Length: 378
Ligand SMILES: Cc1ncc(C[n+]2csc(CCOP(=O)(O)OP(=O)(O)O)c2C)c(N)n1
Ligand SMILES: [Mg+2]
Image (cartoon, rainbow, N blue to C red; front, top):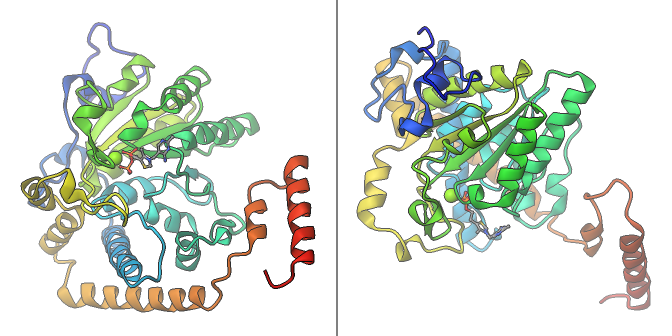
């Protein structure tokens, strides 16, 4: 589609897609609807049959892993876990548009698929959620920051990574993932402002899953969309159907091209629903209705991808079953090897965060070691 003409007051930085779906108009970008029908062929991304298969495999893999981990947790074999169900299309649509060999990811704590696609193993993932810091000792070449629980603080880290790439003259981008709740943090605004001023190649990817624990979106903000917050910083922003792999993939491609070409950051709001609880310690029946959950279940990103692939004669029941079986077997094997070595040394508190320990932490560690020597067996 040719870009629409610029309206008065609109930024010159907006490209065709961002102009057509200007978030201040409350529009949401969608390519494939919940019935699996292509509703916006003009913006359909180019997808080979192999890419479609790969995308479905990844989405199914995340869903299967998620269910397996929830079952370990209920068996008392896993600590608290933050479920990813409902967010698979947003994760894979965005991840497929970056190059894990050069692009950095600064995740929150609900990006299992992105972690794995950046190169972390399932075993490391299970270690992390079992309280083993070693689970986030990154393998060489993996461009992924550790899981970040302090809300939106990872956005600042992503800007730092992007500035480093810019300084070195590399053409990599950094992606910060955060939630709807994260948009109320100062870090969110500070990081976008800084990135916009210095044209840092960052994609701010907001997983708007409608809740920040029990706080619904309407109590989070008076903005009509979260994407419209881009307008204040004069950067491109778009609200996209986060249950639609194709729309997320396409707008992320546009955003990455924008950032990679030196034009600065982009804000994407992926509109979706957290189908599961906030974490395994949460009971969503206390703050949301069954009707609401059922309505969103119909928009399930995995189901939508399945219908689309059925229409393309790519999907079969046997294929799906064999994929699930493989994922479950691999996960059980990884879990067995984690459980065989489930020791959490206190020294881990001092490891992994600094290349060289600061003096005050070194003193604490030495005091701890001396205490341990004096109290063997304790
Ligand atoms: C700075 C900070 N404040 C509060 C918390 C407690 N907390 C953990 S998750 C969460 C909600 C986050 O909601 P959202 O950003 O929408 O992400 P989601 O959990 O929905 O993926 C809160 C408030 C925290 N981790 N960090
Ligand atoms: Mg949320």
